[in-house]
Length: 165
Image 1 (cartoon, rainbow, N blue to C red):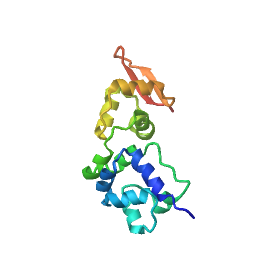
Image 2 (cartoon, rainbow, N blue to C red):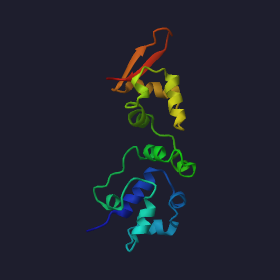
Image 3 (cartoon, one colour):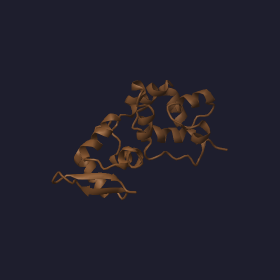
Image 4 (cartoon, rainbow, N blue to C red):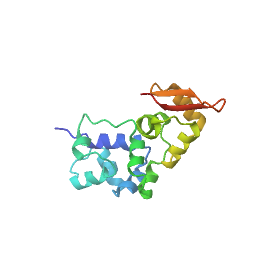
């Protein structure tokens, strides 16, 4: 059975916008080895395969599979997984897509069960290490099917946002 490890590893690295050099720094595996793995060279030790994916929750068996799919929000997942590890976190600092953080971090949170002003939501994301502009966030929240928007009872031209029940 053919192993798709190298192809999947390359797809993962590219989806994270990491150069071979940065990926080498992240994993502690030489650049030459990464190039060889991505090009499909065989004879790779299982320990090296494990080091190449050690920063994820994936198993070698997952990554070797033809059916392996890179989650569209992998960058956000890894940022959250490593948010307290400053050394690793920097590799995943690319600002996530606003829709991803709404879907993965906000909609089902306890925080978003109560009505919130946009500044509160911006601060919520800032506490996670993400700087998201209020206007961009507002635009995405207004389009999101799982977000309820109500006018603020005392502040004119201000909305309150929360998850729909």
